[in-house]
Length: 438
Image 1 (cartoon, rainbow, N blue to C red):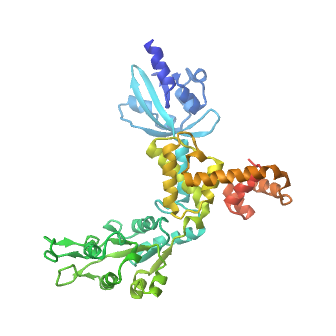
Image 2: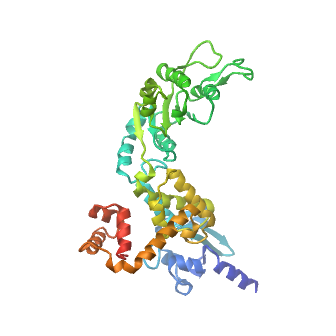
Image 3: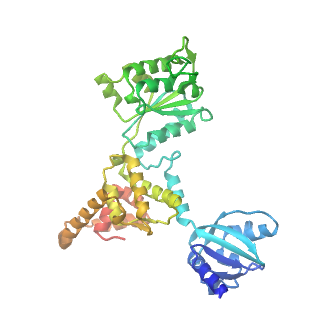
């Protein structure tokens, strides 16, 4: 009875389990191992484990052999060849017990493929794009990073200005030194000044001891001033002096102190317009604007939306221990057509919300936040109301054949097919849906 209970537990486990004899022959495989490898328990029984898993590691670095030799092994990633000859990746651990070897593993093929896909689009850490404008900018990053000139990042809230600043720092000659960040909009002027320049004991009532400011903390390193457009004019004047002379005067101090700090600044405002309005000092603008990087909003780089969807699915699968594989066509249409006033930050928040409610393998319309769900339902109703006249829709002569031909030439890679047709990938996706091309 106990043996039957344990067999039922093992067979219904969400991990693949293979029991291997000391002769390297398979004695038992559970249901999940059958699904991953493609071999049934009957087909696999008494075969050598390497005949079923067909992994390169079986020949070069067999984990059972290593354990027999007294080596210690934790979890390892192995690429196997399934019964249908498809390549799969498993994360596995082998343990020895009662004269048998038990291999416990789970399929991480999708995660590996996503990582590969994302890395192909990565230019630097956490920057995902296939936007040509951004790629051109990022190609200049090594040159900009190698210098010590100030850099100004401009872009809407949520586009990832701090991520770009991190990339510059990671490539710079100062990468081993301090990288200090402060949001200029988060503090009132008096506090921001003391945070930046520090103060001496007795400078004001509560100044019981000296406090070094962020300029001193960042000495020989980099200081990132986020939302610099929110800084007041008097404080801008003090910042200008520090940038121009490389000297700061802490509150209550009688003499200046030398600092060597590289300035990276970011703003969601058009600083040149702020200069024209008199809200930002012209001299400071030109001092911090030696290298200027304009980051386009997410709505200006629609082709990146699907990349971020994949990235966040991969990220939240790990965080929340789920196995979501993708989004439904309806959800994809909603997400591709949303305006994203909050940019990448908003898309991340949407995906985080979705993962609270999605316990299936695919994200559906009902998992979206209400404001997006309403948009999706409206689109669905529009599509349904128009479905009666589908046959009367105007089509361009041969367009369906052109799309099929392009997809065939591109080996059904939508991005390459879209380039052949000289349309964007979203338009191609819609036309494929319209002509029911799969």
